[in-house]
Length: 214
Ligand code: PRP
Ligand code: MG
Image 1 (cartoon, protein in one colour):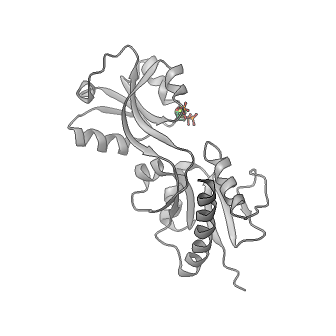
Image 2 (cartoon, protein in one colour; image 1 turned 90 degrees about the vertical axis):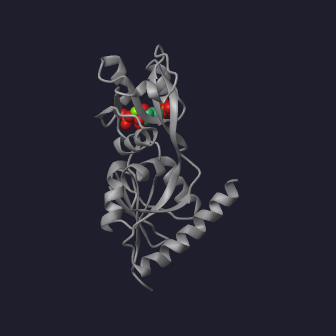
Image 3 (cartoon, protein in one colour; image 1 turned 30 degrees about the vertical axis):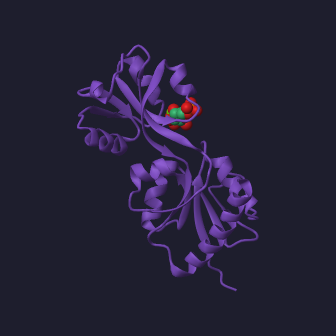
């Protein structure tokens, strides 16, 4: 039997982690590990799991260091337009939205012309603003974006909205939904033919899980 294994990246910590492990488990794949180890193998399927930072995953896929990943579609849109997008996995649903302070009398996107926007999604925001013919100054920050208007760093923010509670707690309101996202399977453009065959088996199992869930 071939020793070839498929390498899959999953988010190390954060909102995708648990559901990513669960879908693999539901697909009958047992993974030996604690997530303290950054790499784990399956006992009953030719799979190696790598636990990585969300934002690093597109580069690993591009380089062919991992063959496939479970990742938010929003991350692929921001950083991985060249990565192959596979099945939608039905969890970690969210929006990438623009939000402004509640007191901002927002009438439309033109109100943000010339404004400062804080975000972790510069490419997504730039593309959206370009389509609307709006120019704004972007402040790129990696986390806790919603604090920016309160500390005078920006007039508006663009970030992920799931329950909406982070916006609410920071006195912000969602004014534009730029895109909707959920977890997807992302495939390296460099995947080998041999590993593609393993991937097809994995996809078949995942589809059965997803069908059973609906
Ligand atoms: C994420 C995201 C939003 C929030 C959205 O942040 O950046 O801030 O969750 O979720 P909600 O609408 O359910 O409140 P996270 O807590 O992962 O931290 P980070 O921004 O510091 O990475
Ligand atoms: Mg956040």
